[in-house]
Structure formats: C-alpha cells, structure tokens
Image (tube, rainbow, N blue to C red; front, top):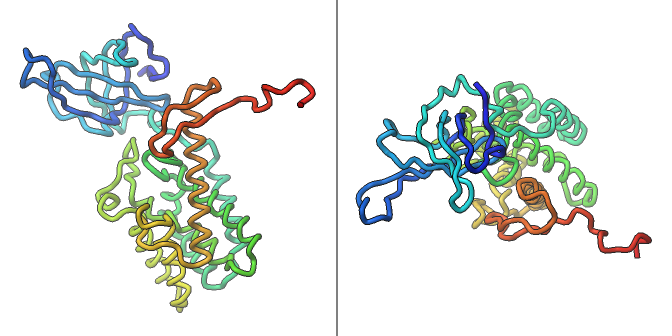
Length: 330
C-alpha cells in the first residue's frame, strides 16, 4: 500500500493514503440554515508533519473516530487558513497491519550504542557497593530494560520519539557526570548517577507502548511518572538485601524532586546537593532538546520561528552569525 506523506501534499491534490488521528473535534455549523448540524475537524499526521482535515458529512461516520486511530482516507487538499484535507471517504486500519515507521519518529541515535554508553558510564562511576547491587538488579530485569530502551520520554514536549527516554536519560547522566567533576567534595557521584538513571523510569508505565501517538495509560494519567517511578525504585531497592535506609531516602528524594518546583509537578523541591544537581541536568537536557526540535520543525530559512507555547518564546535562527562581517572578520 503506497503512502503519501503530509509534507508532499499540495493544494488541489487528491489523496488516498493512511494517516494517524492526532486530534478530533465535533463542531456545529455556524450557518443558520444548518443549525443543529455538526461536522468533524480532525488533525491528521505522519512522521513528516500534520494537516487539518474536515469531514463535512457526518453520515459517513459509522463509529466514533478517536485519537490514535489510523485512517486510510480519500479526499482533496484545499486552501483554508493553510492547507486543509477535505475527506470524502475513509476506513479504519488494523494497527497490526501498518508500518509504524510511517507515524512514529525514532531517535537519530542508535539505541544499542546509547545503551552501551550508558552502561559504561554507570559501571565506571557507581562505586558504592549497595548502589552497584541496585544497578545490576535493574540490568537483570530484561523486560524493564527493553521498555526503557524503546520508550518515548514524552508525548509532545521533548525527546518525544522511540528511544527518546534512553537518549534523554543518557544526556542527564552525562551532564551529572560532568557537574560532579566540578564539585567532588559536595557531590556523592555514585548516588547522583543512580538518581539520574532512575529519575524518569516511571515513564515506561506512564505511556502506552502500543499507542502510535504515545498516549498516556490510565495509570499515567492518574498517578504521573514521578509517583510511578518512585514506586518502581522502591520495588528494585527491596530486591537488594540490607539496603541502607538513609541511602534509600536520598534516592527517593531525588526522584520526587527532580522537576524542581511544586508548580512544575514536583511533590518536593530539591533539598540535597545531588537532587539540586539532577534537577538542573534534567532541565538542561529537556530545554535544549525543545529548542532543537522547534528549530528542526520550523522553516529552514534563517529568521524567527513561530511562537512556541511550551518555551514561551519565538527562536531566532541565523545560519551564519558572522554573515555581516567583512572577509577579514572585523
């Protein structure tokens, strides 16, 4: 089955292809002559982008269209405040028969190489005996590791692609390792590294691995990854005999405070050197990836990006910061 990608759709073009549903709304007609009637506004997408879509005739909708459905649609691309696909027919597709690479972005980095790099750092930097035991308890849980390697770190904001959780965690671990070199007297490197490894572990249960668009599980919606991760950490600690209570408390505090502020979702604010360091390493990784992703999805020509509601700003992109200088660089 051939695939037409969003990025290739043009005004006036006819479409027969598959797309994933990212949003759907049932809206009333504004015309008085159609009072009481409704149409569907749907946001469709694939790995190349998104397109606004319309179903004017609700009689063709035999069952509700939901977010994460994959539809094979036919229609025509028109112009209305940007490109808009007017759908004149569709059918739902069995997700077992689709190519997920059409819809799910994958990390640019090789997961095997990232996992190997993470293990090397952890094995080198974690010297505390009990924390080493905890590390190997994690390594030996093949199901948890497999999910950790494949998971997304988020639905929309940062590292929101397959392998994103591993990529983000590796970045945070590397940042923590670098920061520990500046504060060797104040930071317990073994504790910091383990906290960095486990800080987002709850995301493997927050997001549905079978979802095309990384929808949250019921548990994820009700508890969130911090609470879930805290519980998962305690379960792993319980597998280590005679694990010190104070060490456990410090690790738990790092998980519970890694969002930094209560208004950002942290049950607690960081109150130890390790927790404060982890919070900033996590924030740097997330924010820089957000910047990168906004630049990647914007027009490649130099200038200002569109307003980003998460970063609360537009980003100025300039290909050559020395473009205004003379050839001698003065």
